[in-house]
Length: 125
Image (cartoon, rainbow, N blue to C red):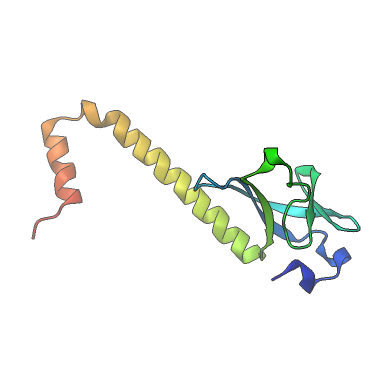
């Protein structure tokens, strides 16, 4: 799906995947937003009303030396894709929380507990 597949007024209310960050960092911040307003040359998204994006999905005005390496773009997504992303993000948060809990309690485990964990992780036939 492309922004140009729709008339500008049809874009209002559509879901976008907003990605922002620096090009030298392999992890971008991502969020699901909706298109709130259409301007003559682009659109604005929810929670970022001061930023204007062109109809290619790129943020307008990122052309100064201070903005070198800055990534700020939107991509049209379906509701199904949005639900998949939210489910994946929630699972990643849960996995991270579980790993942190395990690391925090690792030093206080007994030998027997560590042995059981090792057998679970590395099952021997």
